[in-house]
Structures are given as C-alpha cells and as structure tokens.
Length: 454
Image (tube, rainbow, N blue to C red; front, side, top):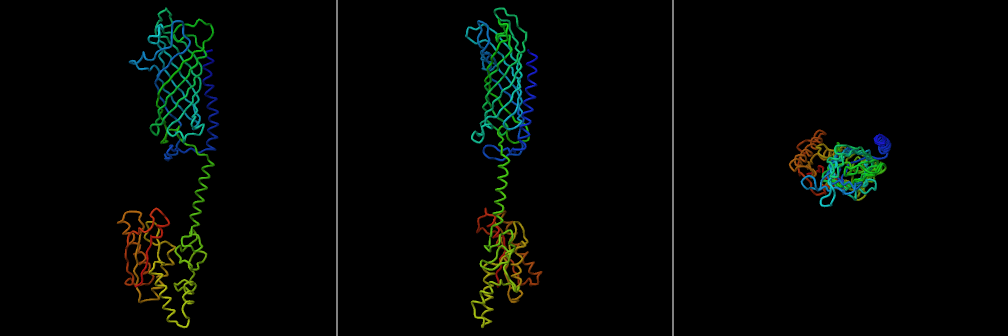
C-alpha cells in the first residue's frame, strides 16, 4: 500500500503539470500579462512565477488516540510559545490563476497540559505536493481586494511518524517510524507588505488514508488502516522570485481583445489630432503646409494662401482692397494695400514658427518668411525688427538664448536672400507665458518670431 501511495504523487504532478502547460499555452495566445499594482502603478512586463515560503504555527493531531491520551498542547514547546510546527516550501504558478507547490513540514506533538492525558511525544515529518488556485484571480476581484489575496491548495502528502518517548503504559514504539500517505487541503489569506513580499495565514487539514500508529505513539488495536487527522494553523512569509517588480499573485491580466481596443482607441485619438485644423482654413493640420493662414483667405489643397501673382500678398486680400478702394485712384489703392500689408505684419499675422528646442524655422514657415522677403524687396526704404520667442518648457536662461537664436536664424535667411543686414534688427523676448503650457498645440503658437516694419 505504501508503495502505491508513493507512486500516486509523481502521477499527480505529471497530470497536473500537463494540464497546466496546456492552459499556459492557451494563456499565451489569449492573454498578455502586465504587472501593475492595485493602485495602477506600472511596474514592469514580467510575471513572477516562482515564490518561496516559510511558516510556523500550531499542529494538532485530532485522531486517533489510545485510551487515556488527548490532543497535544503546542504551548509545551519553545519557551512556552504556542509553536510546534515549522514549514518551508516553493511555489510555481503556470498562470496567474493556477500553479503547484511543494512543502516540507515538521510537527512535534505532545500531550495537553492539565488535561489528564498520559504523556507522549510524536515527531511528524511531511512532504506534500499540491495544486494551488489564486481565488482572487479566479473570481476576478483582484482590483477590489487591493493588497489582499486568497489562495486555496489541495494535493497529496507523504509523512513519517516517529514516537520520541516510551509511553507510561509501556508501549515500546520509541524510535520506530511509520510511513503514511493521504491528502492535504488548505486556505491561505495573504496580504502584500512590499512589492515582492507578502504575509499569509494558513489553515490546513491533513488526512492520512493509511495509519497504524495512534498520535500518542501506540499501536492501533484495529487490524485495518486508520484514517488519521491533523490540523495546522500557521503564519508565514512569501517572497516572489523573478524579474518582475511586483509579486506574481498581484499581477493583473489584460485580455488581448482589451489590448487591441486600447490600441484602436489610441489610433483614433491620433487620427482626431491629425484632423485638427488650427488655422480654420478647412485643411487638416497633417496636410496643411501653412498652419497659420489668415482667416477668410482662400487656400490651396495644402493650406497655403493663394498668391497667383507671387507679389507676397494673398489674392483674397488684394481683391478685398481693390473692391473697397476706387480703382481710379491708383495711388490711394497702392497706399491702402501697403497699409493692409503693414497691419498684417505688425499685428503678428505673418510669423515664422519653430519645433520644440529648434532654432531653425519649420518648413511650414517658408511662405511667411518669403512674404517678408518680398515686402522688403518691394520697399527698399523699410527695415524690420525680428523678435524671437520660446515656450515655457525648460530653463528661463536657456529659453532666452533660444528665442534670440531663432530671431538670428530668420535674419540670416533674409540676409542670404538679398536683404541688407542693416535693415534687419533682431530682438529676444524670451519665454511667452500667455498660453497654457500643458497644451502642446498652444505651445506651438508661441514658438515663433514676429516682425515689425519700421
């Protein structure tokens, strides 16, 4: 019988391992594991499968006993502390829900104080192999449970009973040992105290299906196998091993479909951002080569203000001026046009824009710099102040220099295009704090140089 019981344990593990590996392969296909603590803190991508455990507490053999013997009293051991059980173990989780563990337990059983029991002392050494279920994961309540958890374990055990004293009624089993086997089951509430360390309490029931010694060390009167019962209550500590920054029992599962939905939502958000139209010209920003066109002015398919005669003045603006002022008064028309252009420039409608941390204007600003170039060429008696700005991100001294560098870069472009440097005066206004610095789009509007004609 003993040999059969010993054979059951490897069979149990092989069967459990095979099923768990099948589940694990399915999990790898259907699930992605991300280790996040219950407070939603992202802590890594690894799932800690291994953990080691140590525990101590009380163990009591409840039956069988010979006449005159009663359940042991743990208070007899270790300086009066109610401790007569020690255990160590290792656990491996195939998935966040299911795993296996093995425990080595040592129990010292002794008679109860002042109970009238005859004296006895029994050493009980046990090796168990069990399946483990994370119940908080199984019932999908890990978010509500927070740092708390609950494990259930069930499996087979092999144990050896050895009486340590000769009983007062003359039993002579001292030093003899008997091998037993049976089942073991328990429930373990746990609480995570650090990211990879948790405390647990464990209540375990052991049942021997083959036992000939009573717990007091005497031989049973029965010729048949006994069913022995042992109860344990213990406290312990569990330490997770692995690359993950949090204990595997608190890893949160995200279904792959949810991950796809999150990815799709992110893509929709990106599309919505691309479809923004900052200058309200009807051309989305991702297609708009000139994202600061004047409101109401006609643009082409790339968002550029239409200027068919290439005189630096948008056709729509020229048309407005021509319709407003008499065509018979050429001087008046020219003056009005020049005045409108000056207002556009001096009011900041014509500006050069920059990417974050860059001192060279972006490609979309080429037409605006060309506007200033054409104006200065057509008005050789005019000069212009070029004022640089930066957003609030970064150190103030850095932004002051960056704003100055931006103004200098635009001056250099105009100078190389044929405008005398004496007509170009650079200024730096440093940071522009007029917009919400948390808004990316708002900050784009203040990373600029503006112009003022003199």
